Image (cartoon, rainbow, N blue to C red; front, top):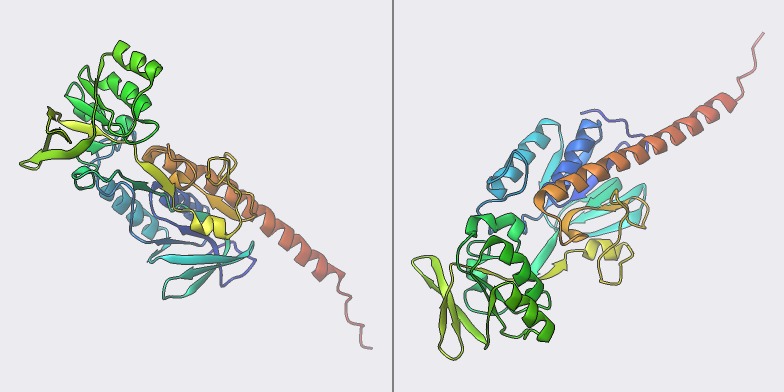
Length: 325
């Protein structure tokens, strides 16, 4: 694969860290722009526990791993270098970044895109982690339709749990809010009651599972409430160590900030997907990757032009050798 790079012929134009929808789509657009691209991925996608993904036009219901496999195959056809590895750190500055792979080589890059996602910290309730992505869910836009009109529970384990219960109510008339460690206040009780959400007081002991299916929620006092699906709001922690290591600024909530194209405040450093936006669905992350690739390639074009002009001026300013008579 030939490229238009002039900054350093031995370097990649872009190294993408993370091969989810955001990283892969960024790499696809850049590869089609005739750029030399490497994608490094540690193989820890956030949605790995889910059997299907939804809300992605033309891909609704596809298994997440199938989408990623299809994306990787497309990138291979464009000559993108796909590398299975953990990135320990990124050093340097544009256009001379150094991407250190765990126990491996150092990749040189003019720009880097960080698409490392986030991790979900789940409450320590027996059954939650084991059933996560199956019948223990978070995003109703991703999986609410599949459990519509069923008996649903929402665990009060997060400050946003009451709001989540009010949202999930859209998908079923039978919603139970388990107060657990987040007791609703007077106003929240009124809102839940007005929307027909039943409140069950007391600490949750465990989730009841039988024959590989969620059957209900057992409380510490021995009561059991039948439920076929339970929603949990996790604590979402961005995998942003590479970004913070490069000095990228964060907002008041602790998330790295970017502009609409994914630019951080550090020249040559871009970020897309859940690493900067906990609300981004798969289709959203893919769009963020494409937007970043468009803007990034234009910056590379501008840099190529600047270097070409400098080279042209140097060449034309060199005096010709004197004629020999």
